[in-house]
Image (tube, rainbow, N blue to C red; front, side, top):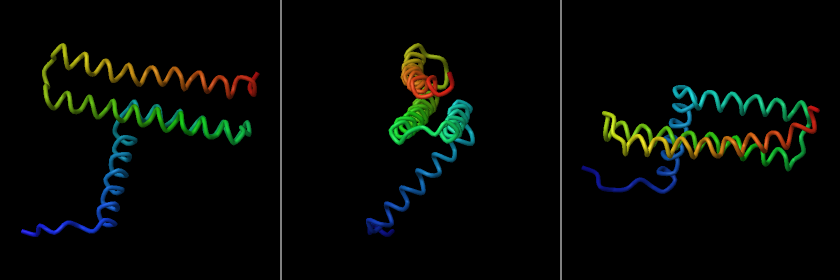
Length: 123
């Protein structure tokens, strides 16, 4: 058995590979991520169409990335909860509801940001 650790760069490359794999799985298998990703693509197209400012691009990009990241964390929490306790349990339900609530809170904030950016341009 080889106890020697891989070099630092090899470990980083493996980490990036696993991160890409996880992102790909999220975008291709999770319906909530597919919806959020589609909204992000639509907003990106709108950003080009309405020629939003650099600051608006930064804020929009952060909102899109954060909603996808939080949705991904919610999915991971749900998967862990289902793995640990596949049957219904009130505490598992509470944990899953709290994670979904975090996504909802940020989604509302992101929608408000979207309205602030696009309302003046559309109307």
